[in-house]
Length: 458
Image: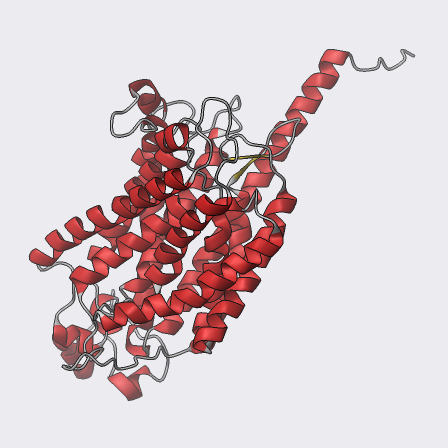
């Protein structure tokens, strides 16, 4: 009987390399799965923040955005990320290599990386749509929201990532822009985009009195909103895991190629969450802002998750957590109705986080060929991200407004978007409170008179 021959050095090396490759795939696979929880969380908290008559409309538009943004990233977004690190002039070879017909953009036994990285980026893209979604609940047309969400998630976020996340992005190479946790490239872009759209959209009916005073509009389920926000926090661990590069056979590296560890991200994510919760609660004493403060805290320390001392991360999150509810109050004084505080939580917290990181991380060396981290670089990066979100968001929503496509009519808003935009009933109690929702019938029957009348009213 022949003795088994020990594997050769070449075979062992090939085995190690394949194991590393598979471990990389598994890591990003589960990061992407966890990121789906972000969308379950946004779904829950936006439904809870809506009044009963608008609950389903809030949820339906979130799910549709998820389903439409992802193919946008496949068709054009991935190519934008790879082709535009130098600015607005594309690298044509990289553009063509990332288009849907390229062999890397589908099942390919020789390519274990493209699809799994694309999946993470697609979930980042969907997150921008969910961030924007909450600001406009209860009065925006679902169709207008979907157009805007596809622009934001399928184009603008990928352009931001090309400039501030790509290893050769011009913001990093020339200015030392440092944003490992995507405070600018995701949260700022989405937050400032939401602010621009809300300005054109206008406040909900009854939100403000003629003298400028604010009428509270409470969602129908605060517990649902709080649970949803907690789910987003869970999903953040997948989101932030996707911000780290699994370096086969070596140390983890951040998106810019600098060495880091999961331990650094763990310390500062948890300390940021805790500080933000306490800061927002001290100012507002509201459960909704308490949990939103957890998001604020993580976003505020996201640029420097790999470098901050945990104690400093806590203090930064505490301070920005105190300020975020005040920023939302400022918007209300300006008669801007951001229904869930999306700008304060994502736009303001991301902006503050970038500026603060410019103070504490200034002078930290970057990779060879890139400028060191500096306050001016972080400021310029923040201004670019704010502009990239606000300007297109304002222009496109203004065009939709002028075309009469941005907002539902007043009578539809007062009746409820569930009846006019979905249509369906959210809860069994609906009929007693609002009347029967229209029912779509596929068999050849005559609707009951009451249902026919509801269809006419809708």
